[in-house]
Image (cartoon, rainbow, N blue to C red; front, side, top):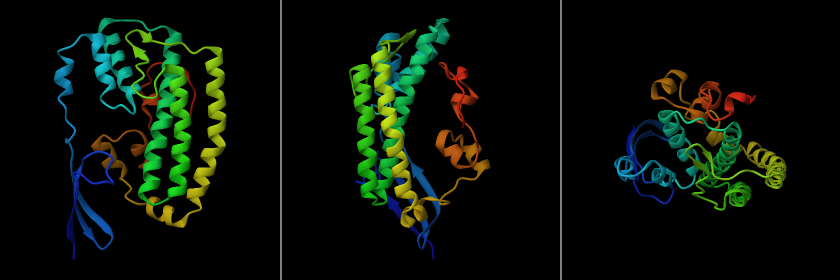
Length: 241
């Protein structure tokens, strides 16, 4: 007989405060109600009280871990409103910075997933690789987090040939280590049993809910905003989804 299990909003396993009301039958979740909003800080109202340039710092604080994407979104909005043309090089630099941020963000959620499933060796290796990306971003921008690299009209720092060489060096190191981590988990029956084919969101439901990114691709829809609605210099880049 189904029973209701309550989780949150504050538990050690949760990265952010969230509340889940789960209807479970045995070890299967058959329904879920999710309650969010515990981190609401009134940031929307704050935006109306500051200047365009001050709001860049505010946009960064929407999420300190992935601060670059928020400043980019904000800067592009202002640029569109004010008809500001961003230099071509700055568009490509934005792509480089955002891809490095995207990489460390993916390492973070993947590491948390491994830790939640008690795959501690994989967790330590994943987070170790993420540190290399954090160090690289600090080398490029001056900060590991909240690096305020985007500004209205472009970026604050160029990438010199020396910095470009450092980026290539770090990425070359990450590729084989990432492959090793994936093989470590793929060969682990306990991990794959808990993750593959579990909780798949049907395509129609994913579209109705407005799912994007890895969540939408997990439903079998080859979609990526960088390809579907390109920004910065993504429209000039050739990559697979």
